[in-house]
Image (cartoon, rainbow, N blue to C red; front, side, top):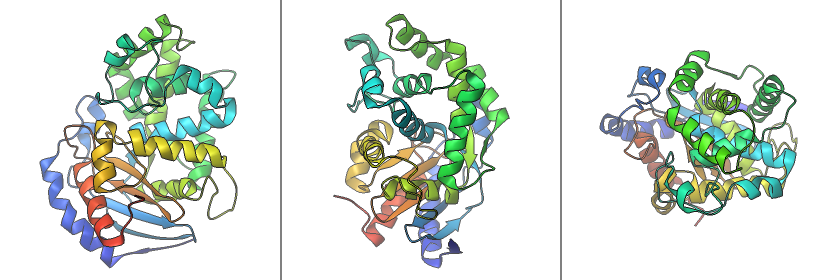
Length: 309
């Protein structure tokens, strides 16, 4: 694996950085308000094992909703798609990621897709294991395998901040428990979910993880098939249709790659059969996507013709 700074990427970072001043930090999770809104970084991990980076690439950030793709891949591989899709749908939604509205109007009351909070909570509730400790340790081992870094961990302060303020997510869980969509203890599901959201990495590790999806589930460095090909395909499809919250259609038009954002400001990008991309900039637009990160990906698409369409 060979990684080096890229002057070309650095110029694109400089071009996109001013947009961060137009965004706002996530405030509903208190610990996220501590981020520096001017940070912007990007890394590209190619399938030949080479990588390039620019900006504040060593800056670590929590995955937040990016983890939804990873928990989906993990659960699909371990319990199968039939069980998962009995409890969560496959359709995009025009509603905000934390909305409860469609749960009340859809019969049965299952979430439309696994990229919104309700759907991701269902997926997390399906993580197999004898107890919470086993569930968490096995899932974290999976993330470490994807990134090639055995030191990947979660931010305890951030997890506790998120756990103590997750009233709406608890409401979603209790609603779905009432309708038989999820089983298990809500507080244990919330602990596991906030831990997965609080996993930290930098954009280089995120790009390497993305390269596994770009390579149809195979680690381009080790050659190990970490995720079955069909499951990698399912995850990439959800990233295109639902990965950028209720701006996924606009993102598909302007950038045109499978991607998943998180309210910490991270964006995971996947260009099938080419590379994985990791972007981080914590100032968000009104829909919860990294504002400067999105613009940076637009500029990159204009220069490198990334769009899959």
